[in-house]
Image 1: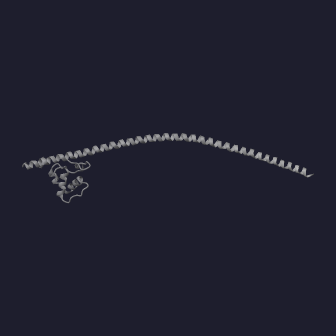
Image 2: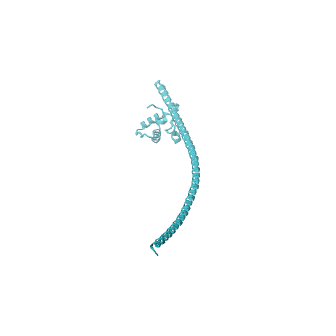
Image 3: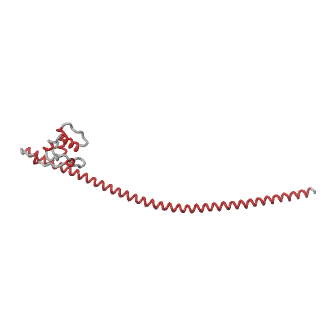
Length: 201
């Protein structure tokens, strides 16, 4: 076999190998395309599932928004009711306090007028018996009347002057809950006279 034939044979062998290699590459590409198609198909399935899940989530979010709107509406109603009730309570308490203060001032004014009238009569030389005097009951701060606490009614000056030390102390603490109690009995009596409007000390 000469050199030319050898060269031609070598070329045929090389071409055969190239064809075989190309065939292998084509098979790999086909398999690769198949795998790629499968992957793409899986990805598309996943995307479809995600989309369906998103639609469900959106529905739930819309439902939650609706429920939150209902809750907000109820809270606004509650706030309005509480505000209204609070204002009503405040107004009622204000009227109650004004009523108590009005009663206190009315009773004190009644007693002061009697005191001034008696003083005027005494300056004219006229004597007014203590038994003829009828003083009004002045409540303690807060509205409690002394007689509801089993204390004697201070209906005339002689009752005040004859109070026992214990009753006198209770009356003083009732009218002056935030003040120290004077040691002198005379000062306690004068303070009670002032509290009920009997004497302008």
